[in-house]
Image 1: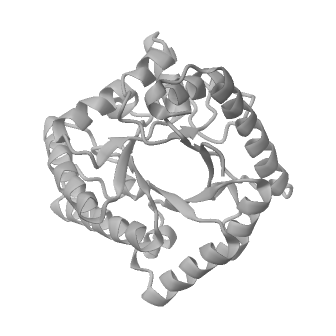
Image 2: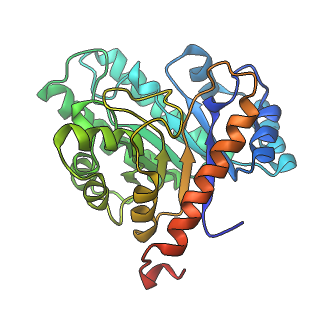
Length: 291
């Protein structure tokens, strides 16, 4: 393994594949790990109730394929947000949080990417933001118990679409187990919308960035934009991230039915490794990171 790791977002592969097929495909393409999705669908949420036998089988597959599940994208809080005005919905959101931390601990997942939403399908208010913050304190305590890192994803909504906004919550919670896992595409869109520099925003999270999602976007659109057709300056973002000591990256893109999806995996890993390797060679690195 080199001096950084590059992961593959699970949804870049056809959902009907078995875990063995997904892990093998990621390995063949040249990735270091897979990011598991726990989204708002019933199918993905059921993973949180995976039996011990199924967990043992998944651990066996990771060992045999030498392809770990290294990170988790927890977007199920769209459906059950931590700041919801509905007590039952909020309670369910905390249950998802607790089960996600337990699953991560069982599978050896290092980082859970936490959606930066107080609510999604209802209006954000002072009360929903207050409940969100209270829930985050509890989430950080759950993560601390298991030694799992939580990282805010910078989203497409106003509450947390920049690293600067995410840092506000990181400072409030003040836990080493709650940090930032920014989305390159989302912060690029926010920077354009606000007339600011994306790298300047990224640097506001120095010392608190766990990993970076490498996702392509265009203004006003946040997903399913092919690499190279959007406006994200991956070289500039990865170089800044590298200078700040970030060594874990994930290519986030989606399988949209292309039968040549394995080629898409190889093209993405080749493109991003080329960019990260160039950032590694040319970026300024603080001596404390030892590279």
